[in-house]
Length: 356
Image 1 (tube, helix red, strand yellow):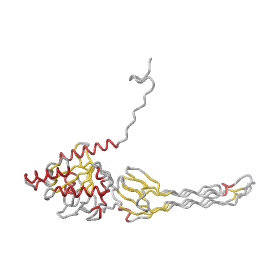
Image 2 (tube, rainbow, N blue to C red):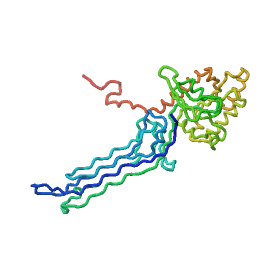
Image 3 (cartoon, rainbow, N blue to C red):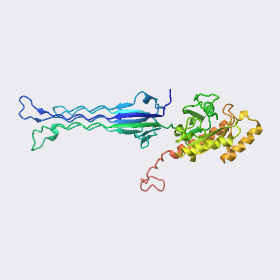
Image 4 (tube, rainbow, N blue to C red):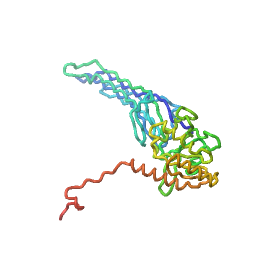
């Protein structure tokens, strides 16, 4: 399935039904009078986040969404039926913007979350609504209100616990394939990964986290070089970043600083996120090269460096346990607190206050 993380759509709510102009005229019934019913309300347009989607590809084939119109009122004081709502299903993590692509309408980051995009028009009043003591036979009925029309942008930011960043060919896709069931494309040329990939990493019994791999960054990515930095939005929500550095290149410190500069230039808090740095492809290094390059990378990053080989599996498990702890700590911090049950009078000593 093709990956699409940005789409432009057009929504229109339903117009309200017209009110009815009608009078009661029945044989052998002495009194008549107005009996025109009100029109039905038009349907609303909603956006709802669902769990079984992970791309906006469906919106490449359908961009226009309309809710149903309300039915007009009828005689005998019959109100018209309301129009059905239109529910647009989007992946969890979808942001909805106005046509200017800057004004945020909603950020649907939880399953089942909904937002009203366009409100349906109200139905018009029938002439029975205007009956009064001084106007016994009103010949007036209102038309229904028109629906709303909007042009909006959808932008998807994947929900993942840990984000993978690094230069092209740093081994990110190989790492993702080695630790999860994901099957990203892997080849020996730059920019093999053209769109983000997600994988679920299982560390132990009941322990797992979601890992996101994005296309590699190069110098000047924030200015559009290479694939650019448009996919960095998919790691904005991550608890931490796993920064992979190719250990087979001479200047590992320079490679690290290049990616860090692009993260800082992108903004959105990525530069301040907790970062785990790993020197990859150590199976291709001699012990002397490994020691030298690990020390250079530690000086550049100012933190502990994990030496791993995604292809051979060396050093991967301790790194996964570290990432699992970070993901679990973030989930715990974001979980809503469960309020303690209120104590009744006389319960401070631990009993229930009851005496025989």
